[in-house]
Image (cartoon, rainbow, N blue to C red; front, top):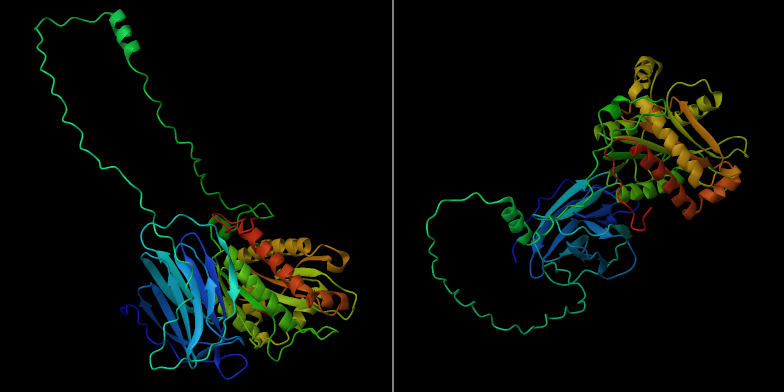
Length: 482
């Protein structure tokens, strides 16, 4: 056993959320063709150390001052069984030390770990050295909760041993006859030819010699389909190609913005459903779909119930060089019968209803009148506005289609309004209103987990449809296929 990867302790601990302890809240994994990606999520920033062990091959990560946040006890095992990782094991090996062990397959692997934020998580990637193994079928990711175990006695933290699985059968010996060397070839006596003038062969002789030749085997023909050239970006709904499309830009990083949070509850339904809780749940469901199916990095402006200023949300997206910004909200109206979904992009408007909604959503902005000129310049960014309109149209069409398009979920269309949360974003950005919590019938739907999942899938499909209008975009197929 040897120590190969002793990492430095990273940064100060900052606990977030309820409780006094930093907690490991979930473990997710994605098994792709060339990489196994594992995300260990926490409720705050953390320090960790890592080391690699042998016989059997495994690598562990100790999250310092962190406890698994679940009630059940014991070592929690998550089977993967792809070409790189057999399983993940998680337990609290010492008081307030959560150990995550990756049991590796035989072979050599490149293993990297990155500490990311919003939400706080440790992302581990395992890749085979050299040529990748044969491409496996993409398996669906799983969210695995972590079970608590009592600390063990002893000075050294124990290595978590997995439960022994069924033994692999030994290879069956096959009797093979001894190979004898081939006999020496018999050397023929040299032939002696009498010299005579060369004669030009007749046509009949040439034809006779040709027909005496054995048929040559046909040359192999490669019937593999030739990959078509990469398609250019499609024109937008106006028949134009924006600079984004002309440059063939892609979507690699998505910022999801669950509206409101903390002391800002947003709208509250007659049954008590708070907008801030609803949109956070839908955003997390959407983020999981994006990570699983698009392979894009997902960044949340908030991953728990805390207040984030409107201007800070797009500032985060710009700082992280995001390619898409999607703000998720729920609507409200003094007319309790109003219902439906609608999607906004940043622009000027003469609609009184759109201005009223923008006024409600912008109520906590810290902008002043002196900022008006700067705000107008940012709103007038033509290329971003064009792409935002296209993105909004795809999201709205998907929301309407996948939520049933019924009267209760009627299509309220794509609209434009000067939302502060969208101002300043340097990437295409939209705000989706996923329903009216003020409508008691719609509030009842929005309280259901299966309906929230449906909304998340609709938002994902809108993002996917928009992304596919850009060049070179590929979406990983879900295990069930689409």
